Each structure stands twice: as C-alpha cells, then as structure tokens.
Length: 124
Image (cartoon, rainbow, N blue to C red; front, side, top):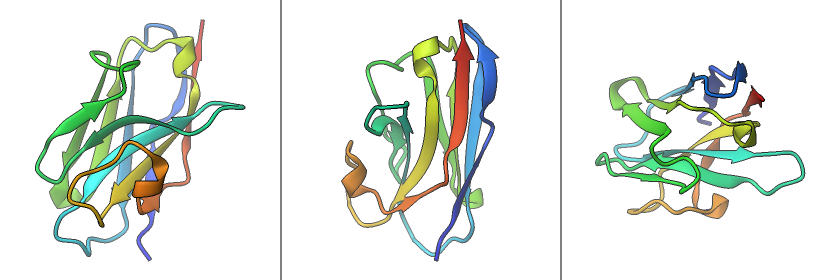
C-alpha cells in the first residue's frame, strides 16, 4: 500500500510563505498526477493545485499567482510553495496521487491515494 507523507505545515503570519512537501513511500506507477487539496473547519475538502504526469498545472482561482506546485518524479515528491499567505488559507492541506486517470480531476473522488494532512495556520 502506497503511503503519502506530508511535511512543512505550520503557523505563519499573513503575507508570509510556507513550502509543503509530500513524498510517496514507493514508486510502483509509471505515470501519475500529483495534487493538493485543503479542508478548513466546517468546510468541504477543496482543490488547491495539481500537476499532471507530463507537467501540466492547474490552480484554484483563490491561489493563482500565489501558490506554485512542482514535482520531482525521481523522488516521488510533490511540493507546494505558498507565498503571500492569507488567513483564509488556513486549513489542513492534503497531498494526493491519481494513478488511474489520463487527466486529473478537480474533485476528491478522482484521486486514489491521500496523505494524512498537515496543518497550515495563517494569523492576521
């Protein structure tokens, strides 16, 4: 069973930056997409960003031009660089892999593996 382990969350002031990382425990797939979702208290888990096996990227409108997703396939690792953080970015951030679909989706149902989540808190 593939496990995803996130790191890099924490407490930061508004306007600050954080970099999240997520590594897979093993590499058993020839191609896969990587992504990040987040869930704030009392809200549904929502799409943040994703990068396809070929390098195509997609971002939620709320994080465009502030967040950057990247991947190191050799290390089975995906990163999320978060700049200009706002209090509304406060949430638990989850990394996820999709090994089943040619094109990644923007809903949780299309992703196959999930990390345990890492808390990001942005103070005002």
